[in-house]
Image (cartoon, rainbow, N blue to C red):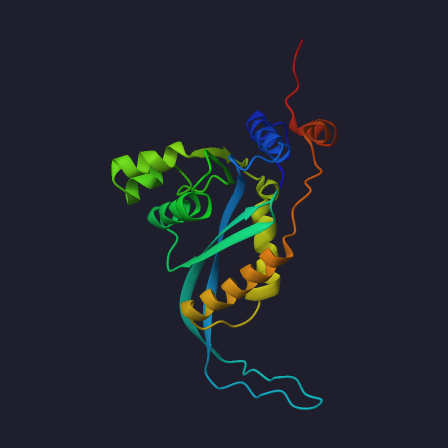
Length: 221
């Protein structure tokens, strides 16, 4: 969704993210896009009928709801790597733990992680202080360079695009437990990372100023 009228806050955040996407690759400052989604866990009430010659597997229309799980996804458009973590909840503490995973296990040598994400209330450096002692929270916060996509600008987050691919390729079926979900997502992640498909983001600030001109405030001379 794009705002229907001139919005200085929107275009400011949009141009900030577009600038990030057109930086040269720097292994000391990797660009990481982060997003999250939930998955309804659904179990079978009867075992599916296995496939047979000329017949697909048959699944009973009845099912059992088993709660939900959360998925954090980080994708690196310049290297083609994805990192997915399944959690029981999506609290500030869960977010902070995922950030520490990115900082200490995925990019321990990086000077800064250039983090692009939306404005969800848990997506704040303050969440680190809810999860860790002050010195640890500050250490992690200093490693982040955060850029927020604008409200109504989720299309600017490459991680949301990747979540759509994850949903189509892995999540559009019944999965009955968090353990099964973790296994399936891990297999998807390994396959996607082997393909190592980078993102060639073509839309530039110049394009935005031309094609989305109506979003820019009119300046009175």
